[in-house]
Image (cartoon, rainbow, N blue to C red; front, top):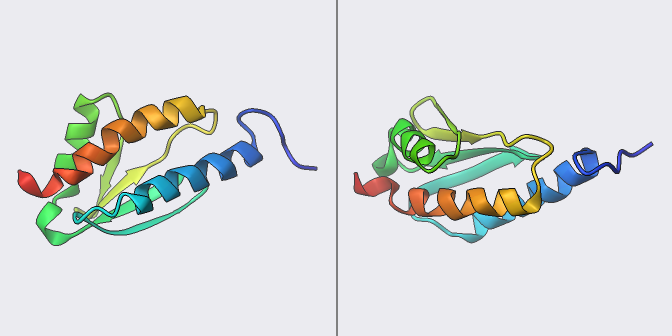
Length: 104
């Protein structure tokens, strides 16, 4: 049986597809690859945008929690109960940080 609750598997798949599409559609010069499943996303940064910790710290200043991994990857793991509006709010902060990642 499929879970159709607001924070269920269907919502996770739908919002995850939205997240990955938004990240890939931004076509950022600082991003080498987007990986993930559901709402999890790994953003592999190009060498000029590393270390990923700088971007994670900038996102924290914007109110978005992210984890740097192996100096080259920024990991996003939003809660499964996130709404589309909250995800959009996060993307409004994530994309500009990624755009400027190589500038500091």
